Image (tube, rainbow, N blue to C red; front, side, top):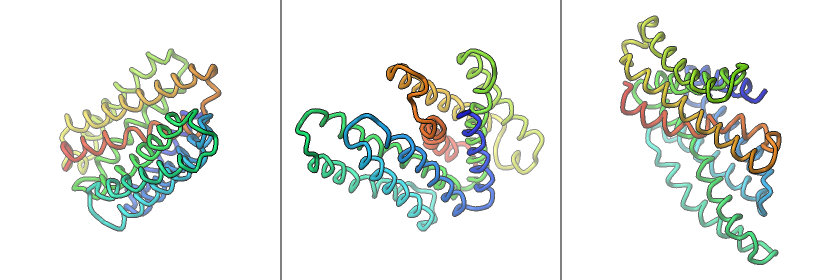
Amino acid sequence: MPSLLTAGLVAVLAVTAAAGRSLLAAVVIVVQALFTLGGVRFSSVHAARPAAWLAFAVAAAASIWTVYDGTSGMRPVAAVLGPALVAAVAIQLLRRDGRPGLTASLTLTVAACALAVLPVAWVALRSAEGGVYAVGLGLLGVGAVGLAEGLPLSATVRRALAVLGAGGLAAGLVLVIDDVAAAVPAVSAVVVAAFTALTAVTALAAVDRIGQEAGTHDSVPVPLRVSMPIVTTAPVAYVLGRILVG
């Protein structure tokens, strides 16, 4: 089940985040590969394959650069997106099928690059003050959503429970673990976990919509469904973590 795979991948991210930034970046690159080569690559839009490879190359470069840079800033992401846009246009110039599908192809390429670099925020956040706690709380929200997807309830109910559960678990961690309490106020922990859970829920709803428009739930590649919640929640966790944690 994709939701359990998401929860498992979140657990691996949490363990590597506790171990160090380099290991976290390695798993983030796996997430980026799932999103691009496992998801974007199988789009029906023309030039999906080169778009996926370009997005993966840009995303992996940003992850490695962020580790090498050693700071909590997102400068590497901004630096790689500029050349990526030029490369996206160049890909369109290499097309030999005329103008039909040009807008969709260019949109897919640019969107794939922009989304693929988002998980770099997990690596950058890990370098911030109290970053290991911020990353952990953010991943807690995503993991709660992944586990809740396996409940035999309607999508609305189980996703609402996931958001509430993420906030409750975050508050519990602050109450039980002294190190977390010293780094993160209880209210801040709840906000980070609940809002990342809410973002993950929104991402899954978007994936469901893609499946509906394609005609079947199974038309969405499993790697895309697994990676999308982790990809989209990264910037939310980064912003809230920088503001509320540490």
